[in-house]
Amino acid sequence: MPEYVFRIAAFLLLLVYRVIRKVWERRLAAHLTQRPTMERRPIRERWLLGVMGVLMVPTLLYCMSTWVDFAHVPLPEWSRWTGAVITVGGIWLFSLTHTALAQNWSPLLEVREGNTLITSGPYHLVRHPMYSAGLVVNIGISLLCANWLAATGLIAGLLIVVGFRVRDEERMMIDAFGDEYRAYMARTGRLLPKLGYLLRLQNRNDR
Image (cartoon, rainbow, N blue to C red; front, side):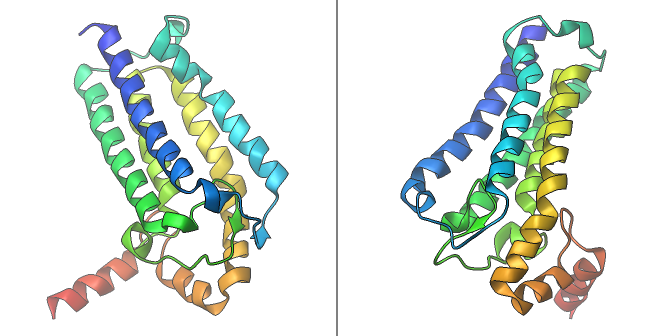
C-alpha cells in the first residue's frame, strides 16, 4: 500500500484527537479564565506542554513530507492498521474522559471554584485515564507511522509530561479533597485499573 495512505490516516486521526481538545477548550473558555483556587507549578506546566508540542514535530513532518523517511521501520501493513484501530480506541477514551470531567477539566494542574471530585465514567477505575488515553493514542500512531523518530517524539513527550505531573496532581487533589481522594486512590490505579478491585467488582456482580 502506498505510504501516503498511512500519512493521510495518521494526519486525520491526529486531527480528530486535536479537534476534541479544541472543542472542550472553546466550550469551557469562560470557566478556564477564572482564577484557580489551587494550582501547581503553572510556569513549569506551560513549559512541559511546549516540550510535548516540540517533540510532536517529527510526526507532523512524517504526515506532511518525506523529510523523516530515513527513520522508517519496515512493519507489516496489518500491524500498521492495527495501530490505527488502537488510535481510534484511545481517541474514544480521550473523549470519554473530557465528557466525564466537563467543567472540572483544565489543561494545567489547577482546581477552580466549584470543581468536584469525579469518580464516574473512566475515572471509576483509573485516576488518570486522560494520560492513559494519550499513551494509547501515541502507541497507535507510532505503529501507524512506522517511523522510529516520530514514535520516539510521541512517546517521550507524553512520558515526560506524565512523569512530572502525576505526583503533583495527586498532591493537589489530596489538598483539595482530603480523605475522599485518599479513599479514591486506595481503590483505583494511576493509569491502569487495579486487578484486586476488578476482581472484587466481578465477584460482586456474580452474586
